[in-house]
Figure 1: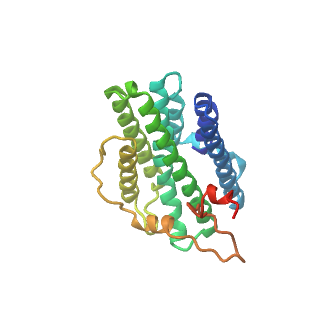
Figure 2: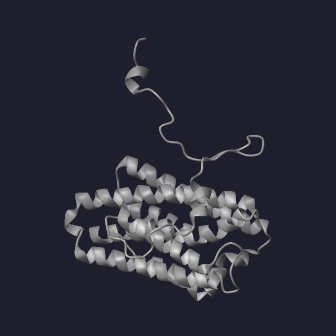
Figure 3: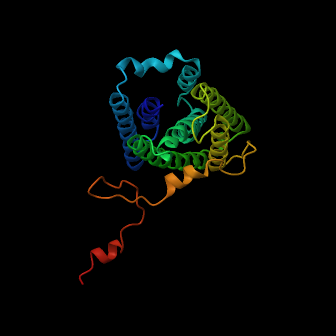
Amino acid sequence: ADVEVSNCYIRHYMNVFKPTETLMMMSSFAAMESVHIAAYSHLLDTIGMPESEYAAFLKYKEMKDKYDYMQGFDVKSNHNIAKTIAVFSAFTEGLQLFASFAILLNFPRQNKMKGMGQIVTWSVRDETLHCNSMIKLFRTFIDENPDIWTDKLKKEIYEACRTIVAHEDAFINLAFEMGPITGLTSDEVKQYIRWIGNRRLIQLGLEPIYQVDKNPLTWLDTMLNAVEHMNFFEGRATEYSKASTKGNWSEAFSDN
């Protein structure tokens, strides 16, 4: 998914949106996807998996269906641009990846594979920023092109959400085919992605469609949203900060 999302920024979005600030944002997001790819490659190397595993996912129908579905979107019209942003940014970066995040982060929750958990935490941090930023761009694009915000587009976005959730259900069944993981069940993950799906739909300006009113994995929010503390002798804190500087530009150039 990281490869496809990176390709979407470079091959689709950056060919459509030309303001320098927007291109700066997208190029930085694409660069971070490359970091994610390298990080997961490092994980496979660390646990001794052969390079053949990089393409092994195509042997599983549940995973190949997810890959094939992402090949069907383009930016040939304003309608398609809006739909592609919804699918790749809201439902791929902002939903599809989160089932895997929940499964992987359950291991450090059990005090296992903590280094891997740190990498995943960084990925969640980045994907959340990417998702929220691109949804803001989506809303601005709709405001500037109100004629495309039709019942047809809304219906297609709802259908895309349902399709991606169905693909995730199949993937979750595959991941849990040998039984539950300590502290986590497949039903909990399925409910979680539906809760995330509702959040993304609301952010896009649509109505939620799943009967999930609260986060079924509250421990995940605790792990992801707590203030990050780090012993600087052992590592480096990497959380984003907002409004960390004080003052204003007029003060910076004053004579006093």
